[in-house]
Image 1: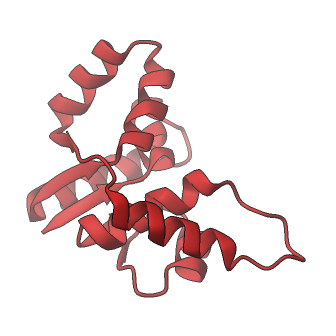
Image 2: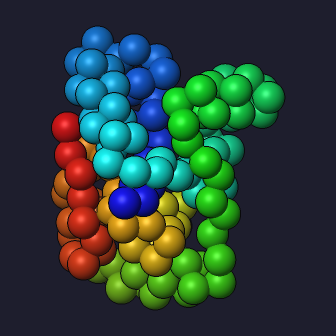
Length: 131
């Protein structure tokens, strides 16, 4: 089982968020026990920005058992298609969120996140693992 992780979940974990940190840690533990953990290059970069250093972020993600799995062409195309289908009347979401969802859909078996609303709405076939 390959589980992709989203940035917010990793932020909750690494920042020991008072509200979501413990649930994020438990979710990551469960997903790691079920198989492989991956992060797309976008999530990896966002986590690196959190740490202020690519090397520190890589060390932390490696300790956690997360592998970098860069997006491929199919992911880019799926993300673009999903982004284009957004309702013109609603607030448009950044394409980055669509890349994370498309990456999980195409290159993993599921996505660990606490954002059921966004990913459930835009990626209906994506299996979500929630805290």
